[in-house]
Length: 495
Length: 129
Image (tube, rainbow over all chains, first blue to last red; front, top):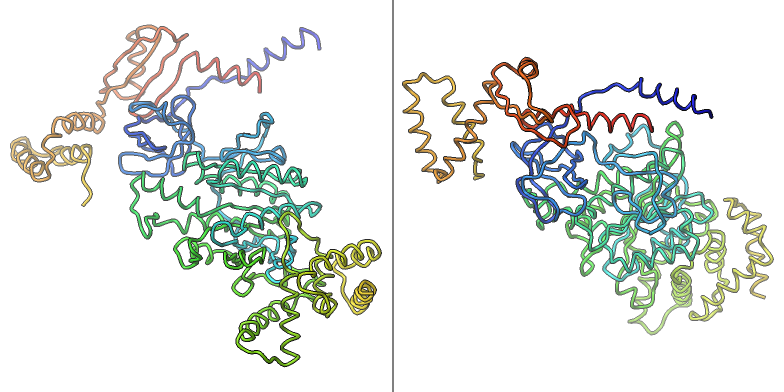
């Protein structure tokens, strides 16, 4: 390009510039501390509007009072002084979104914290957004394969569903979520893991595990650590769902894990008390239900007219001493489409994942299962419930009829089969095969403590010599011929 | 019961006295002082007067406009500013020699930035984007 051309282009650009007066609305800080600030002025400030403090620090206006505005500060508030000028930005809080975030670890404002350099994102999505309306949605009908036998068989999750994972500390809640993310490899699913109030060491371990399993190729991690301000913990889930909405709007399926919403509620309580909002039950503000409902309502299956994408949410709630009747747990249970209860007793009895299948439920149910899984696991939940009753009864009785004894033995083997090590999600076709085998007596003569070894042996045998059959099962085919072929395969394996 | 702020008392004082006949003003002020004593807000009376003055100026269109510029404003520019913002408005001037030119006008919470520095930044952005 010649010098003349460059000069001409520059002249054109300068000529096209229209100078105009910059108009800003400002206020003054009258009180600042503990991550919140109170300002005078800003009479036209809007709710949830971003404000700019001195030093390039941003905040979000939450309290619009008669003469003051209360805001949370998104950054270091120690440099802000009383009397400092605050400007309105005219924008609501938004976060960078896009494919550039896949494989990255970011904070609640979308800034990279993994040391892999800046992301050049072009698109921003608002953190707060009205959830899709009724007509924009489609019923949930596609499965999310978690790779965990007990869940895929008896508490199936569908794309667009909200399934709560609830339990005491150290019961395997995060393990269930991480295994689900790992199992999404090759499933055409983007994943977002939102870590709220977690120790950074735990998040680092999780990221390392996801990298090892190759899951970071399709996962974004949003971190608001335990040492971050409460404002970040409050905003992180909304940042995560905004990132998910970008992919869902493009017709893709997204899985988002909120780990955990209890800590988000604590952070929101802290902010609300500092802003002097009236405390309600357990000192939570009156709109703590709305905090979670507006977040979780954004997870849905969109209709074909809206791209057909979906956001599946796995919120995690930590209970204290197994109390699911507490305030926040009951709130979130009433919002979600089902819950997975993890119990400490079961965990220490060696049942891992420590699912209480009796009280866990998926309100989507069979609509989120492929046909083979629906057929083989249809009666599994009922059989397990009957087994638990009989097992309790058998403790007090020495003589059992053969039928009862058989049911108890079968139940023990199913229980052992449903145990699964961490970071070892199982493909759905293998799950169908092993559940079919145990339901049809192929494990009846195997000792309970040898069931897992036999399971591995069956899977290896089918992989080696019955791959086409497994492919049919994976494709959702089921009929007399497939069932017969599977029965024959199991028979061959037993020999 | 929630306490009222100094500004709210100032606004109430203005609302009470704005259209009151002059001979009734002393009686109204006595009543106001009694309320302050009852609410234990008398020690904030001085702050209330400052707020009252500021609020009264705003309501009567006589509040001050702060102008920051590189050079002192001449009569012509002052006249233009008063025509735009109101003839009753007082102009308080400040000089900032670090500016390249133009001025910043502050009217209450609204800031009008007409400096050359800002225009140059906008021009740079316009050329490069």
